[in-house]
Image 1 (cartoon, rainbow, N blue to C red):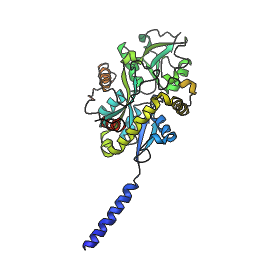
Image 2: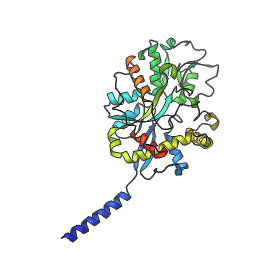
Image 3: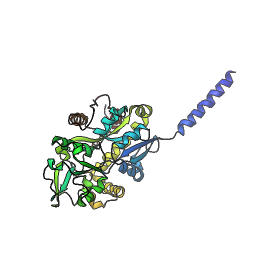
Image 4: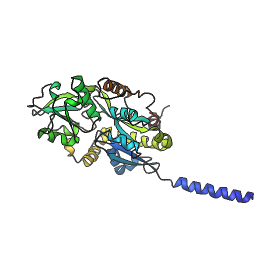
Length: 339
């Protein structure tokens, strides 16, 4: 009888060992909107080109990037379990917590706008348009990639500061890439210009910068990665592996030594000429933290200001409940050492 039980235990142990060794990597689905601001699709491409940089890709985790029109549509994708890591604006984060009732955790940086010495989004009108001041935007058509996005929140915050309510303008949702043509064609009266679409606009007498993102909301953590708490709890080891590889990849893109290869990858992903991407990963681009650390103080300030101005319906205190930086902190220790 004892020998039979021992045999069963040995077989079960062997089967468990085989199952563990052959376990599928955790699929991590990451949302993104526009690159190179959002680095996710570039890092996915880098993993295929330079697999030696990634110690854990294909082993403990597999990466799948998913494009969205804006940050707010990612709320629903997370709610129905079709997205693991959402790229949220501060407005999207607040709405995910207060409206969708998701138990979110801010886990990493995506992009900061208005960081000292770096690019800030430009809100542009035609130079010969009747819009000379922010107040003149009242009654006009404004472009937005998505209601509640970082771009949208900065724009509406500036308008509210100048007494313009949402109902005072007509909002036309469209891709950032389409905005310049829509402005030229008279379909909208004001657009936001990201660095990859600024060539031929910024510095051109045909256009006028009405205000910037920095003017509207100051230096901010424009977009951050957020995950549901239960997803983190269920997959922590694989997620730390992922963030270790992610931080290495971010630093690779920011390293001047890799610039030519980085621009090749970016040109391939964006379908833009390499010459038009000279800004990427420089101070003419948005700021990316080399440690993937988000600037949480600016997140809370922007949410509070948006609620005060009526841009967001309900306040939420992000720190400490809705933050978990332990994943990037552990990943950084692996890379840099230290306690």
